[in-house]
Image (cartoon, rainbow, N blue to C red; front, side, top):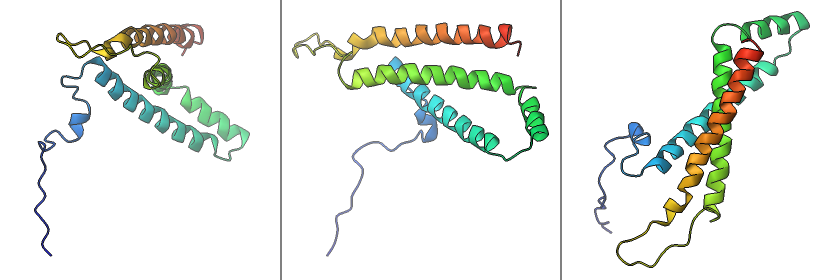
Length: 150
């Protein structure tokens, strides 16, 4: 039995992994999707490192030494970046859930030229995510760097 030669009917993926961050013609929603991926991976990596460090069975003096090392150098800045990523990831995740369940999408119009895009009805939520993230991260940065003195 001879099988037919199956050929792709689409263009090959020339971009590979860098194609993940190329938004192309998709706009800001694609950029938010990329940021959602990156922040999710960052929070996951931090969670794994956090579990490894806090899971060590250390005596009191060793624990104080490790925590003293964590509060020096660039690690506090890294913790702040994890905080900023987690805030964005959470707020954008709420927006994505609301879009997915149809709460932020407007009713599509009739398919008559000029066409209307139903996805543009949720554009206000995109900007709300940016504003809320900036406000929360700004306040957190003030508390973290100014008040706590990191």
